Image (cartoon, rainbow, N blue to C red):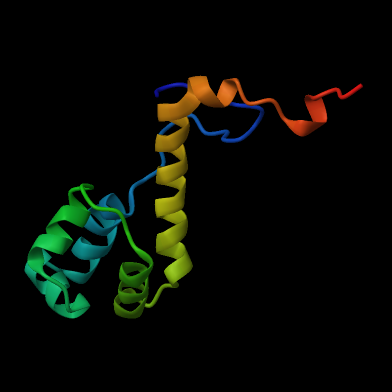
Length: 111
């Protein structure tokens, strides 16, 4: 999706939200001088797990959000909100046709 997507104002953004892995790769890791291996060690997870996350092939789970928050001094909500935005965007994109067929209760007229 490249343009604004709006199913009755469900999501009003014109570009795909930033994946938490991109944020890690582009902002956090360089700022702290971390490699994938070093971040994996700090998070106490495998290098493969971190590699998949920073290459946006893995979603941030609640457990990973807790780990990231502890390592970087953020909140778990920071990471989960980013992931939630990506997930909503992807789901709306994938199911736009089906969602357009859903009739909101306030629009339904029962006689």
